[in-house]
Amino acid sequence: MRTRREYTVKLFTIAWFELRTLARTRAVLLNLFLLPMVLIFILGNALSGNFADGTEASINMVRVMIVEAKPQPGRGAHEQTWVRSQPETAAGAHLVGLGFKEFLGSPEIEQRLQTEYVTNREETVEALIQREADFAVVIPYDFEQRVMTGMEAKWELIPGKDSMKNHIAEMIFQAYLDEVNRIQAAIIVLGSEGVVEAMKAMNDLDSTYVETATLNEQGKMYSSFQYYAASMLIMFLLYSGLSASISLSEERRNNTLYRLNAMPVSTLEIFTGKIVGNSLVAFLQAAVIIGGTSLLYGVDWGDHLGLLILICVLVVMASMMLAVVITLLVKSSVVARSVVVTVIVVMTFLSGGFQPLPIELVQRLGEFTVNHWALQGTLRLMLGVEPAEVMQYIMMLGLCCGLLLIAGIVSYRKVGYHE
Image (cartoon, rainbow, N blue to C red; front, side, top):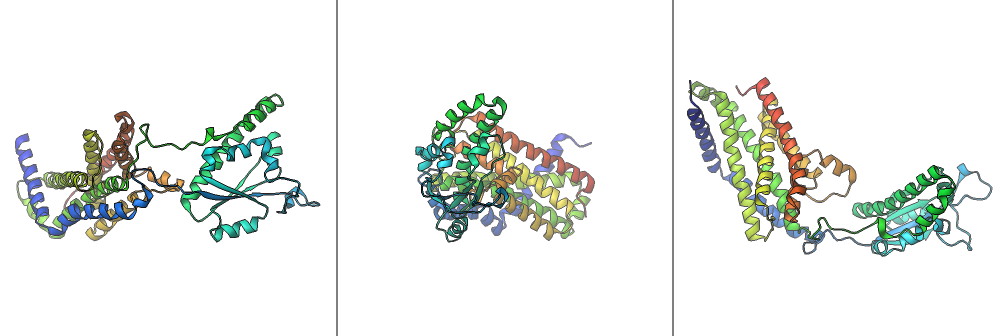
């Protein structure tokens, strides 16, 4: 019966052989060590306009057109059309009681929105198409009355062509509508007694509900080089699993796995040794990227090196398990490589690894990726937040790794590693 020492020696012998094989392959060395440094340099410089001197992406003024709907005389409520307001009616007058003017006139909102009241919806849509406006809001003429009587009241938000500006405008107007909904709920519950207090609250509405803030209490922001250093670190650590997939597939394709099985080495030892060998290369890759970007590009990775190492270990573990699952379940080595690459690229995109994405749906999908939790945890380490805040991202990353580990074990037991 073999001792634990003999098992460990054989395991690391296979891992050392895997290391030597990878070291002799120039293409692998260039892809793992040189390419990420080049990409970080290119992306950090090319997209630095979105990150000004370590600050958050710059936000330009959003031009918003506010369309006031008014029922045409002689038509029913269900036959409303858009007509010009009467000269004696000031723009937005029907929303004075709901604090809309005060809301738009607050300093925080005026820094973000440039509003213009119009009366023609078709012209507004055309202005959005021609980029003469960035966003539009259509407000029913009886909006205030419907709110105060507890009836359903809706706005129509028309986005423009700039996704970032759309996101900003939607958040600002949604803040106002959320407060209107809260006041309406109070009116419904309290009845006539709550109307006076509701009106007072709406008239006092200001910038309390919209605030420009930084990502952490210290007001520190990450630079473009920091963002893409973290993003490329995670993406290329995931690509390290591709090397493991290629190595596992090559043994079967070249019929050398059968020869290895003839030796006094179990299939599990061969399989584990290859995973360990490629993991060691990935850890070396992480050290090169972190150290290289810190020395060459001045990237600040934060003060908690232990947590950064833990994130790298979990990402490497997820990478290896992802490669194991795909390699064992897909018979063709070419297809397995394509699937691994596709999954990594899609996860990087959804997590905002190529560029921060303002679209809420994509952000939600990104939360189901390994990249999202690793990237957000790493960025917060760079911002110098407390370790307790980073741990929630590390725990979610650990959960992803645990699920992939279970999937890898089940795949190995069901399929195995053999020719």
